[in-house]
Length: 357
Image (cartoon, rainbow, N blue to C red; front, side, top):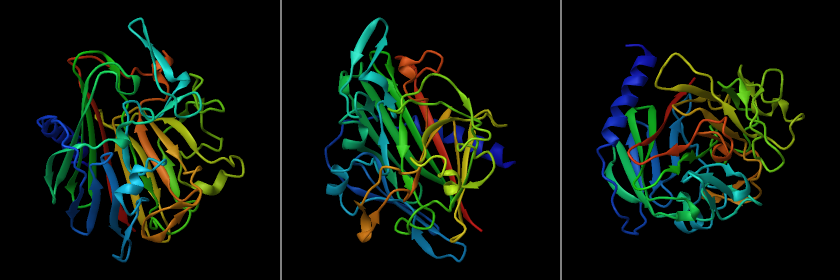
């Protein structure tokens, strides 16, 4: 079986399995959980359904934690970076903190200037999720019930996220959402910050990245898309071939925080998203998803952030690759719709493969 066929088979199988998990009411208890497979170890918490750490070997077999984060749950509660969390009900930005659906205008709380970011002031990154299922050598499933009117959004929504190994070095994230009584926008995202040399190793400007998106959705000074599409070839956003992340920052001193339109690949189930490499450790991370876009963020806004193990995170300390629907799609008709109706199910998956060479 080819790699693409195996990937498609695993994704279809896991989507079917996760659908069997029942969304339950939260009990309000916060815990820390682990997944282990071979040398790989992932630590998570049900606060924000958050990835707290991921231990991975380098080319010599030495382990390092390649995820930025905090030492304590208290720090995650005070977090403004969204380290490792699931964000929603609608990830990224909604311009003007409002949208119209079925003739009714919904006004949302603004938490990013005049706009709503990552679901609002208390999005899914700041709630305690229920633990529906956990097996240390395979998976954990978190669930959450978002009530009608939650952060201004219409309708009750049942949400789940599963983190699972399906091979020693392959890891999958499956996000699902089911509207119960009203149509509603849904655009979940996983917001882990990655530094393949180690979370406390400095900046990622010498990491190389290849992004499988030949267009971006240009934005204004508030990072709200214009609704247009722009070819990346020949611009500072051009990572169609592998390049160092810092190679064009002289042309883009603010760093990267932009949505790429992913190119369709040979698999009908997924798009290839990115390949990231660190030459010092030899670690490589590959990513696939079924979403149309990915937000490439070079942690431009980190500034003296006190992280775990005494680390201080500065600008460009990591990258986030947030697969997603396009930003502000609720207000831009020519973007793919994020509206999910009762009887429909939102399904979003990410597949990671970690190697070292």
